[in-house]
Amino acid sequence: MDFKIVERSLFARIARMVLRSSNVAMVLGKTIHLSGVDRYTFLKDEGWVAHELCHIRQFKEHGYLRFLWLYLVESWRVGYYNNKYEVEARLEGMKHRRHMNPAQRAASTITPTGLPLPGDEKETQ
Ligand SMILES: [Zn+2]
Image 1 (spheres, rainbow, N blue to C red):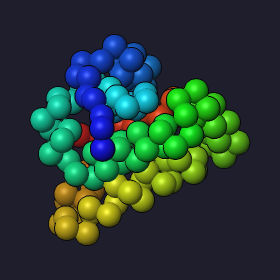
Image 2 (image 1 turned 60 degrees about the vertical axis):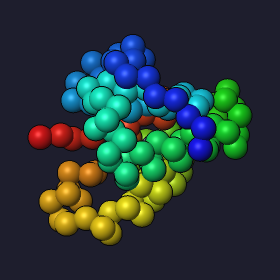
Image 3 (image 1 turned 30 degrees about the horizontal axis):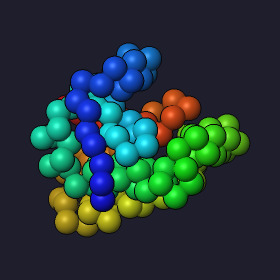
């Protein structure tokens, strides 16, 4: 899939500060914005990459502005965790988890940030 990565993204940094999170990946269109994690660490994490690529596909499927709107409405309606776009992305990310041991699996948990944008955070050590 065609995508771009922006490290030390201002958008992701703002999200990270608001959320007091150690790291954030946020998708806008075809671009994955990172803060608190570098490209190399992110790309090594198959499950996390699969999760964010799923958001890129959702942007493509629905159109940029339309998807932002749908995502927002969905979050508003059912909450971030149950947002169907997050549920879909989470399932996509979990396909890789069966190859992991329990410790890796615990470390691989990706949760939606709770921002009105397709952003995700990861608890790290
Ligand atoms: Zn997500």
